[in-house]
Length: 254
Ligand code: 13P
Image 1 (tube, rainbow, N blue to C red):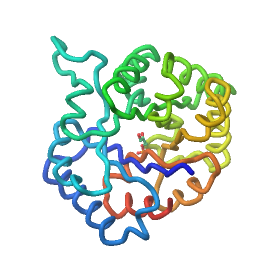
Image 2: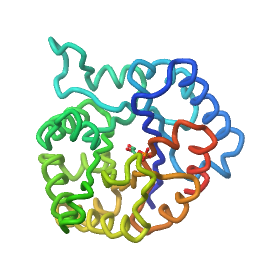
Image 3: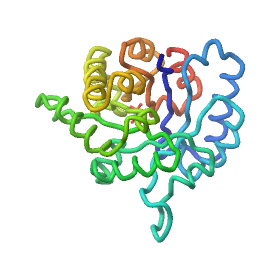
Image 4: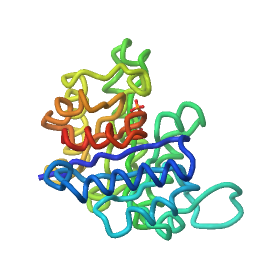
């Protein structure tokens, strides 16, 4: 059985006091009612400057910490970048890699994402690797091809054993921050495809073990139906993760 992962990607939002208060509210609610919120694993991915502050809050709880990005080198003259070992040092378990905002706004290629994935795995982090098509690509019938190319490009050289540590996030670009969610059927179709790709590239055991999250306008009122799909193993949540009650509502839906 795959334990669903509900991860809050806070993106470039909140300041220290708000970040700490949000993490505290989430941790407190999960501790108080593990029957309601404890069926899935929860992770918080704050802006990197607040990782340490949020780490202090989640320490000793079931809530995991994740970063939103990292660099593929171990250390050295890379101004402004963060290494896998630094993220481990502050308590991260996860790192989001290849988010569409980094691919489209900051120009990250599959090869860039791949380097980071391999470095993250070597450094003991679990990468959450994002894939997903634009609206134009969906309308042109290219969704399956795009996801295939991103999968093989971003995960090149990852062994079956390493793949067990990887989480895939299917985030259709047209559904991110737009309020337009993929229907459960649209999402499930791509998730099932990804599961088949995992089987083709690796084996049945790996395909069955790897968690595939859905991301894109997930809210408390659409989470349960999305998460009830056979191949949807959690959610990567943007906007709704900035409000404790909404994030908890999604957790409760898992
Ligand atoms: P929204 O939930 O705001 O659509 O963002 C999704 C996302 O990009 C999570 O990584």
